[in-house]
Length: 375
Image 1: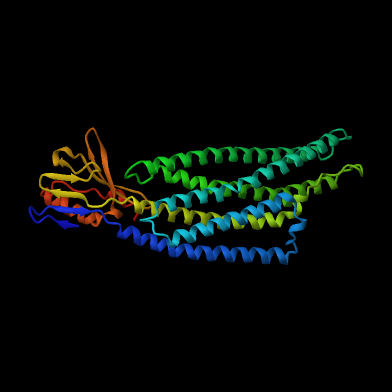
Image 2: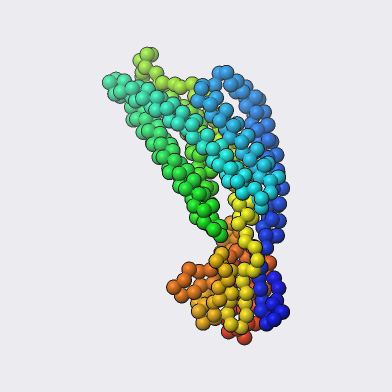
């Protein structure tokens, strides 16, 4: 921020100091998140061992695959987070984009065990459906209604996972396209791209959490309830409710669900750090805004542009909670609004408001009301 010595105009310049400070803080927080993940893994192993269920050779293949891919996803994310912590975003744009790509790969590794769960649930549903057909042929059809409810529940769970996988594929394609568009658009802050990238990172572990809950729910609630009902009925000795080996791994799936919650916080931290580095690269240099008695001079890539006071119909802030935060919005009739985040300027919103009031004899002001909800 400075005053032009020729006509005492107020000038706000682009400055990446505050954004760089935010990145430094995020980097320090990321190390704490890595420690939290390590502690979570240790606690998970201790619990599984104390329950005498830490025996990978006895787990079914789907359980082993899920744990292997979850471990790979966590490892990739930790490496990405550490590299983001110690990289310099103002000189390594390609690295930050690569890190985002690695994060997407790490997160989407988790859709593989989801597909495995669908196969498991599908096979078990067929077995229970056959069991229900057998019950339907017995006198009085004992336990048939409860068994059919289990079939319906398993079918719904399978459909939910299928729809979620399809949605994840669509979101992933949209995120990649949005990232490319963001990087190809000068001065773009990625307000549309970053939510798509965030969704592409969070949806896969969230879907796998649903699968983990499904395993525990079916094995520890639905099947025991049905077994209790069937034990009260008069069934032939050769008619028994089908079982599946995955239900013996229920604790592992429960613990994996807890790890997935921690993983989501880890991958989100890595995502924010990489995006913040990309934003830092895109901070322009030079003057951003000039305020004088005639009006405003706005920075454009093609050069500065004069906007007289009569041609400015909006002077306000636009609220954003994500980095780089709230924006200064200057509207002009039949023209796109001029936007710049306050975080990227060397002047505060209050200082800019004071400069506008002074230049216009208090007839114009910067509306900072939209920032109240953030504060």
